Image 1 (cartoon, one colour):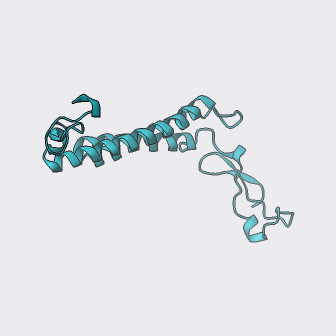
Image 2 (cartoon, rainbow, N blue to C red):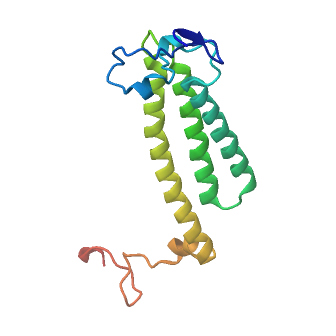
Image 3 (cartoon, rainbow, N blue to C red):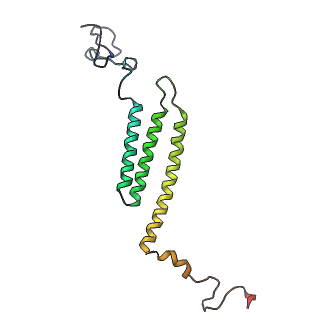
Length: 167
């Protein structure tokens, strides 16, 4: 059979088996349907935009679930970062405006700024979490240690220190 015919999703496929130039493909490969970007159905259900948006929503929901279920502070911090990654995916999906136009630069700028803020906030949260863990292991002794430290102005014999002419 020679010519082009519609396939499952309405796109036209080239199944011509005549001995013509097949663009560098072998004759056996030339019998296989060739789909181009213009032959794709405009109602194709899975596009990159939906893939990124769907993955972002799944990541956000998983992050919320993990944040609510897990008790340790480190796991909650990881869950927040997963939620942030989901938001970044959704913003990238929103930036898409079609094949013929450039994506919107504002969501991309928001994602880059968000990554910087997320890394900084994660570093701060890890530092605070480490300090909190140290304090909880000491039983809170370190918090009152500043009140029991000796005054640097006192001498080892207990007499008041200060300048040489203060006596």
